[in-house]
Image 1 (cartoon, one colour):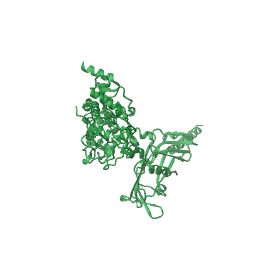
Image 2: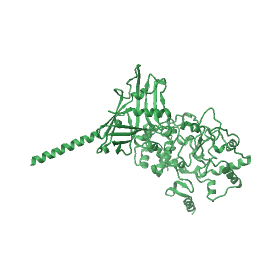
Image 3: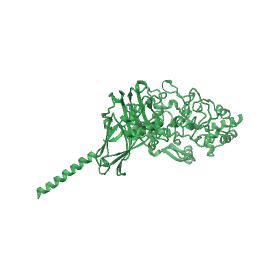
Image 4: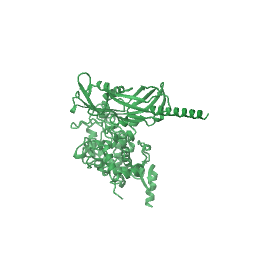
Length: 337
Length: 232
């Protein structure tokens, strides 16, 4: 009976779903925009998703077999790298940015803090090839997969072709990443009228809508754009963000607006992980924003919040935690059944 | 009477044999890598540069051509489907492109793109010659490298006198895709000379030895790279 209720509620709130048996592997939550990913060029299948999941958790992708995707994108922290301002990779080398959380990727058409990657399939090439991350090449990854005992069979099952290619490797990883949908936080259940905010959460939500939601647009909690949020430049990194990709000075200091979903667990914050606590972030927005030519227009008028109001906003932000997502066993390390 | 029949049959057979031979001849495009008057091979051979005793070695020369079309008096008479080819001077096989589908068309011009267009650049993982394992895809910033030319010259003030030109970029204002249009002899096999001498000599190697990302220099050099192609 309970199962039937669960299934019924899933059916109600899912307008499109990719269902295998009773398992929903990908779905578009009700009232969400259409995804950006072109599924027709990489149609989802259970075998491909499982293959992608195995690859995601397999350090075979790195030069010396020490680093997997999950090393910097762990599920319990919304697939980011906590505790480190700057993420570290192979041989303990430290990168220059905080690894982004991996959530609702089907709705994105740019990736990385600076949007250097234009399509989800191509995303994995960057960490695989970066000397500070996995220090490997896709050609060599494919060679290693070909010589492994497990993978040729898995590729054959997934793609009906036992010859492993870069294309299929990347598409399989995309398939797994596409399934990482988070839309079952308390906020979502309130929006579906299945639950209520507390008075404090409600006050925080109103304040959020007034002060934050022009960039962190619901329901994804990002406008998917690049904005300069006024952070002073860290002179040890001199990271000017999007400008490095476009070579356009109007893009100086712009970084992709991150989603706030599961923000409770995805600390530290900002592209360089400079803030450890949400209170640091809110204090920054009321008193740290630096003016420059490319400063986001939304921040040109100073944000004013009392300390109580900040506490209320944080109470609201904590309602964006989706425990079902963080502990969904479909997303975790694939243990042999 | 009988003899006459056999004779006519023989004539037909001979004619169709000729047609077949011709078909085979005209259904391929063959690239001939050259450095001025010398055949270009990507190994340790030295080629002389300019008149001051300078020299150059080529280690890598590969590029994409796409959207092959045959024209007769400016009208498209044939175009290749899924037309993407990685031409690699070090890989003899890649220097010939068979286009059997074009055998029955009458043409006097060939046109193709040097590089990969923007649509393919934003369409995710591709297979065949476009597979990223081919080493012609940038990993840190999405996009195909349209042309790679690497080697050494005493003129380069870089480490080991190396130069590396990776030309690519599909987004305005750094779109490096170029169209190449060549007049060819009517309905003959298409022999295309790839002579990089003038191209290299147009670069001041003492000042410039590296392009590794989409930028203004990449666009300028891509425009010059069109001059590499000519018809034998």
